[in-house]
Length: 91
Image 1 (tube, one colour):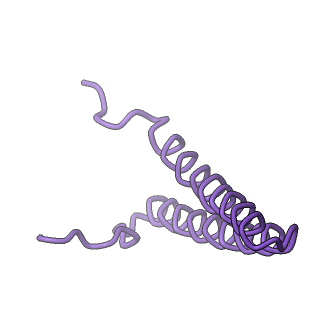
Image 2: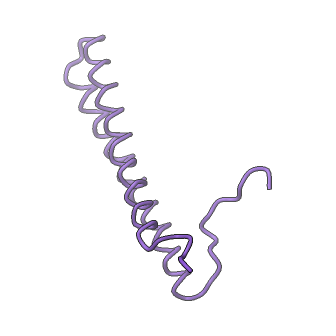
């Protein structure tokens, strides 16, 4: 009988989560910064400021995601219940 969850599924999940923390905040800050610089003539200050803010947000998100994942792995190794998942609404 095959396992419901293949061995590679957790790796793909963590890759997706970390990738989203890299792409979304940084890309959003780059586009918004460029737009604000064009609109208000502040080039390159809004672009640079928002780029730095996007980088900081990405860094915190990546650290939080990896800490949660490492805690989950540690709980699995030591046989503790998984308390890292947030409660689902409506249950």
